[in-house]
Image (tube, rainbow, N blue to C red; front, side):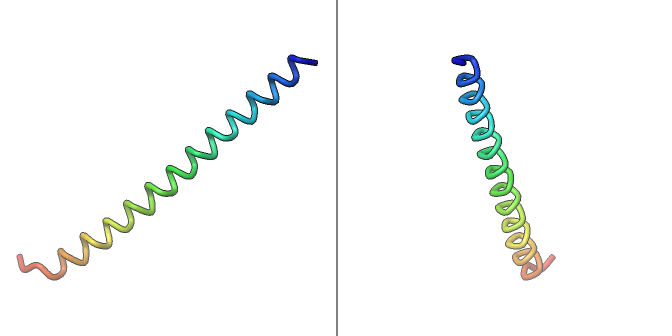
Length: 48
């Protein structure tokens, strides 16, 4: 019985870590897209 409780706790910890990883990836992709649009905006304004 104690083994099952340990397994459940480990499962929730792993699930939480995966959830944080997914949130981090989403945040990184959003930041990358924002930087890309800002860079494109400045590139369009600057003469070459």
